[in-house]
Length: 216
Ligand code: AP5
Image (cartoon, rainbow, N blue to C red; front, side, top):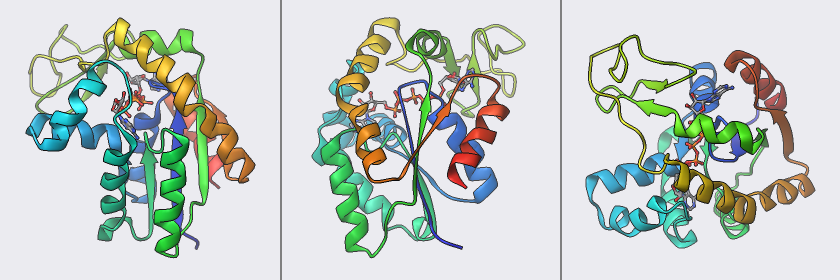
């Protein structure tokens, strides 16, 4: 069996994190999300978190050199040696080139890039309605997955929170950033013969089925 060195590509709200979670359960691979890593650094108040915060809060990308260093270190961890699911990285052509180099230096290469496609009109309500439990991390959505008691986690009753960048203004800025800086990666990976595109609309299980077929 070959390595499973995978990238999930897609606009904010396309479902990268949701599908990565299902892939972890099925394939026992680590999800490597630069968004999660940066949010954690922000929460912990590290130097990186402080540098990243301003960019994240206005829907811009954090400078390439900050995230590339983070990824190179993460890919060297023992749990990433048989494969990985990159979610939210790379996001620019220089990041993609740096990733190719980091892998090549380690005698490794990408095996598949799956682009999850969802129209912008669907992405905005997905993101502005997203909520989560700050205590246990359980995900909710005000329309698609509401908790039993409004605003409270079904598991532990904690008040749900909204991600700082999920307000409508910032969501629109993130989508524009995606169009300008990340969408070019679709052509980049298509030219390398690594890309498979899947429709990210519809029931979660149906999308997962398509993602698995694209990875096969
Ligand atoms: P990041 O955390 O990567 O955010 P993002 O790309 O904007 O993606 P999201 O996590 O919002 O969306 P997703 O595609 O994972 O969707 P999800 O599954 O949650 O990045 C945040 C910020 O960090 C960036 O703006 C940037 O500043 C910085 N950053 C991160 N990486 C960087 C990098 N490499 N370089 C520079 N800066 C970087 O789903 C969304 C919602 O939709 C959920 O509510 C979910 O339940 C729902 N949903 C999912 N699938 C479906 C479906 N099929 N039907 C209905 N609802 C669905």
